[in-house]
Image 1 (cartoon, rainbow, N blue to C red):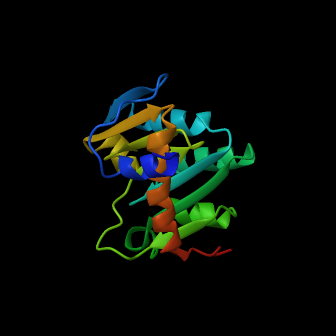
Image 2 (image 1 turned 90 degrees about the vertical axis):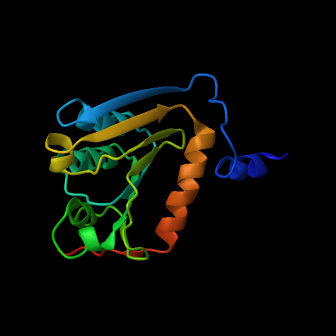
Length: 172
């Protein structure tokens, strides 16, 4: 079985073992480390962060992504059109800073909340990138470090969403 077929089958097959060196971290909210874990994951990026978001209003997350872009990390965001397209949001802020952002209106809700970092690490869970998620809601964050096959599956889903989305232009 070639590598491409193996990676494609991961999305539809049963459990797969984690690669040697893989590890995970979990945090919860409100105020139990969820935001800190998201920021830690962003801070480790060296080359690329692909963001899939539903509601995206978190100032700390948007500033961490902007700071990563200043370190020459490529940042790209795809977010829900209804949750981010009619009012000023972190998605708008990032687009105004020159970071590529697209909005997806293809579904009742583009409910994804994940990061693909350096093609090897995944951040996922129920945690929206919002202050309410960090401080008011019961949410979870899971970071799975050093898992390129899993990151590849998430990247493929991110790319599919990106390709069907529309550009959020700069507003100033």
